[in-house]
Amino acid sequence: MAGGPGRRHDGNRIPLCRALRFLRGGLFYNKALAAKVGITAAPTTLDELEADMAKAKDAGVLPLQLGNAQGHASFLVQSIGQSEDGAAAAAKWAFGTKSASFDTDGNKLGAQKLLDWNAKGYFPATANSVDLQGAVAKFGAGEGLFFVDGNWDASKISDALKADAGFAVFPGKTQTAIGSSVGYAISAKSKNKHAAAAFLDFVHSPEASKLAFEQGFLPADTASVSAASGTVQQDLLTAFGQLRSTNGIVPFNNNAPATMDKTLTAETQRLIGGQSDAAAFIGAVQDNWVKVHG
Image (cartoon, rainbow, N blue to C red):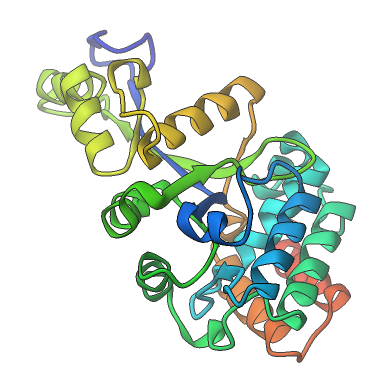
């Protein structure tokens, strides 16, 4: 909110409020399966992640749960790409900055890893026909060592796996995450300015922060919430703190532009289906971006 929470406006200003934070691209993991295959901590590098997935595969455990009916494999590509390229560079493309390109070393690596990991059997064979919530249910049922998802599914995963649920920043060269927030504004012509401002004040209050956090969202004021040690909620707070300190949150690629979600869904399905390669994927994504941003 412009001027900070608690400031009323005089009818000429339009206060803004960023209320709830979403993190996508974080790494959920099953602690029980990790222990089963000899893994004692969440991976912090891409090499460690790949080594852990290889261990899982050798032990007969699905390495990474994935539902790509709605294109969520694109978040794997983005997580790898922005970690390699850096959050600032990745954000330029996501925000539609002129002359930005998707054809980067990081995104090429991400697309190739998606191909390689699928070829190695690290994903479910039915990934392209399962939606996100179907994958959440499967992960909660113990199918998969790792799962890339957002904080909004943390409560479901925690309820299903209990103490075995863990969460960490996606492992890579730099600490980044795909993220966004819910934005609120008050029109300068509003007939109920003070009531709206009071609502924005409430959204930033300790009471509202606790309510939001209980539902799996990261509130604007994380200082007013807490979680028991060893829980996935505590992991989320730790990860969010790390990402804020490094300014590592990048907007969703599938929102840049509005038609990108459809393109990413189709192109990741083609990759996983063996009908495309990394270069064709990069080209198709950039072509869609150029049609809107030039």
